[in-house]
Length: 153
Image 1 (cartoon, helix red, strand yellow):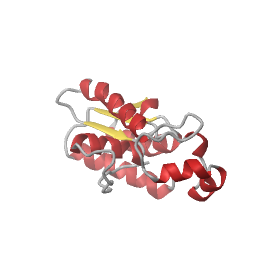
Image 2 (cartoon, rainbow, N blue to C red):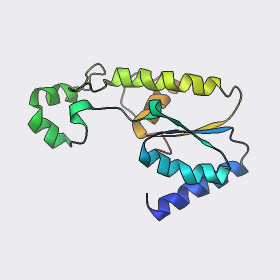
Image 3 (tube, rainbow, N blue to C red):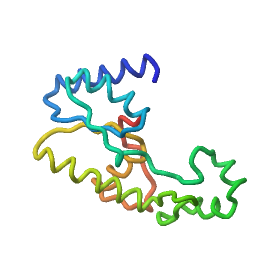
Image 4 (cartoon, helix red, strand yellow):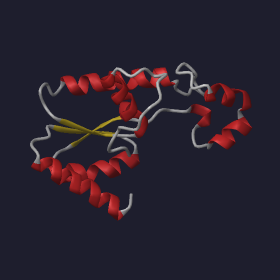
């Protein structure tokens, strides 16, 4: 994370602290999310609660490859992936969009339940935030995302 990103995360923490209490800060346990959440949590004076379940979607054999590489290495699977079928799971134990969505929703249930009436901050990844937004907005997995998520790492 750049020095500018660290400063932005700290400024956001200070701003939120000034707007009222934050009861807890949760984060994905992956490094890029932890780097974002640390200055944020420090500014709020809160402990970070790391959760593996808040990780980004696992793409199996597609992981770490761009679209062109996936198309070259897995041409049939690439075609199926491009249909955006929520049930399609990439080879190598990749998560389908449906499985990923349910993982995220089930990860959030105990977090929300632990803070009834409270305010929590969740610092995680864009795909996770998209799932949370879809659940809260009752937006189907087949609907196009509209990019309303914030604080993605």
